[in-house]
Length: 487
Ligand SMILES: C[S@@+](CC[C@H](N)C(=O)[O-])C[C@H]1O[C@@H](n2cnc3c(N)ncnc32)[C@H](O)[C@@H]1O
Image 1 (cartoon, helix red, strand yellow):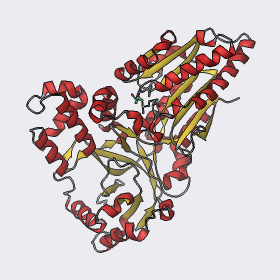
Image 2 (cartoon, protein in one colour; image 1 turned 135 degrees about the vertical axis):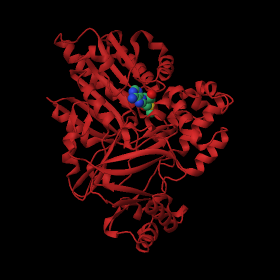
Image 3 (cartoon, protein in one colour; image 1 turned 90 degrees about the vertical axis):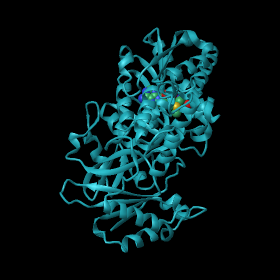
Image 4 (cartoon, protein in one colour; image 1 turned 120 degrees about the vertical axis):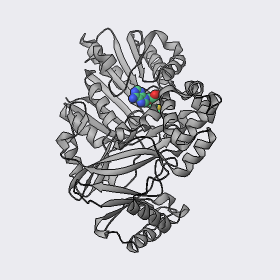
């Protein structure tokens, strides 16, 4: 039996956990069972997100394709260890696994598949589409859930530093008469537009001092897949209307609407978006490579209560949930008046469903990394150097971020730059030490971004990629990534 205790820093924290308390009861329960212990991995994480997709103890089958395959991983959330009887939870999970009753009473919302295709991303999109309804119900703005309680992209010193570099590049080009008439800046994933507002205000102020008329030539393109978010952002930057246009687009395919800007954009600005894009996870365990497949469900007790609250049976829940994801709460209330009296009731149903959603997981052997499409036209081979870099590891693939990143690089002017503030894992070893998602931020999903993978993909395309801790707020986990054409 292999025991992988990832949050070892917690052993020395101010309120330390002990291996004895968190792993002891689990291993004892395993020892008292009849399972083949040579086929078991115990994995301990500290799931820092209070809202997440996991039970404190879970079993994840490992499928290598061999008939009679019975290996599994037993996953423990060490943070919640003191709240539950870990030995009992382990016994219950083992018994359900052995009897094949783990799914009994659960309401399944989908079939097994790569996590990037899970309906959790439909919940995520619904949240941004219907943000006003959610925020009205919670009385809380989405920014409050971000690290630091507001977007670091609002930080004026941070923006001034970006602008100083941008203006220096433009001065150089202008001196050589090589500066195009239109100066394009693209922002992907604009939220409420406050960071755009800070950018534009600071830009105008710096330009007034600088005196070379760049503000007059500025074209700031705000892009988001939520029309509601774009409306909100447009209002926030109303003072700068003449210099702003907005595009409804999927950040994973920026070229779909911005293809006309190939090689023309001087700055692509992204904050707190890559960690919100669909991702798979892969693992390298005992010399084999696996894709983590997941399946969203509602636990039996939550499903029973939720069903009662909307005058439904648990069996009717998947239909209602998928209608909610397709139509949104207002139309759902109209389409299902027998279950929901009005939009507020539908929003309540949405919030309670989201709070209850769990993701069961299993590991499925990958026939070959070359057969796994990481992003359009990017083979899973790009993962090999990271997966085979040492001990067992499980990591995010950041499929959406990689796709977005690659298409974005193609938009950049030869002197252009991508600046991205986000939660980023900057070394593969960090995956062996901490939990990096998925977590729930209000109604949205967060997964840290695989920095080494983005760097690998970017460098192969001739770009310099750099990571630095966000320089303008101390103690933050936010990292600033920059990408620009290699000199
Ligand atoms: C956490 S907010 C960040 C907003 C802002 N950049 C900030 O730093 O406060 C994430 C934003 O990304 C947008 N977004 C998420 N997934 C997207 C996608 N696939 N395509 C386009 N926009 C997306 C959301 O609508 C939302 O506006």
